[in-house]
Length: 291
Image (cartoon, rainbow, N blue to C red; front, side, top):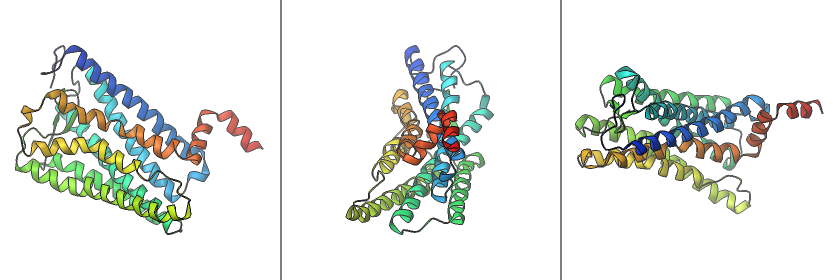
């Protein structure tokens, strides 16, 4: 952890400022876009459907990631972690919960869209609610394990944010990493890819392909893949041989996921886009209802 007034090892003044600034921009952008998405669900009754509930779960998870980035940004800009060891554990847990929920919610949305477009039947409320509950309980379960001793949370190289500790590379970390990655990265990625591939195969024949079938999987792979690669590297080589600056790159990439998801699922949907417009133009929405 960087002490107040001192620079973290391996970072210069401008580099610490740059990381803090990038995190701040990512946090504010993700928070604004996902908050508008959440508000649009509250604003438009048409969006209160089981399928859109899965998108709402994703927006809530991404808002949590952005809040986590905002805490890291403020700590980075002041060049120290002000919340102590307990605060680090809480920060790591909150970030891990929302990251896993975001990944799994993406897979849930993919399956929900496949069910809607290919099976031509409305997703039941009970199914959608059960999926959302499962996603969040499962994410909380996996995120709690490091607090109980399987894996652990610690400071990232900058010393101003906390994540799963990969510096040891011991048997405890390796067993947790591979088990967690199987159920919370590779399985959701597989579900997402297969769901959209089947959807594309069926809907291209009819010419009614209305959703982006490649961006969600690419977002998962390129948004969270660098973290997976870093963690995998920690099981093979001594991470101290990896530059601290390079170790911070996966964190900065992952914090762009909330913005990309908001653009894809919210701004890319005409109905959600209409709800966002109503949130930004309340007077106009009142006039539309009066008409």
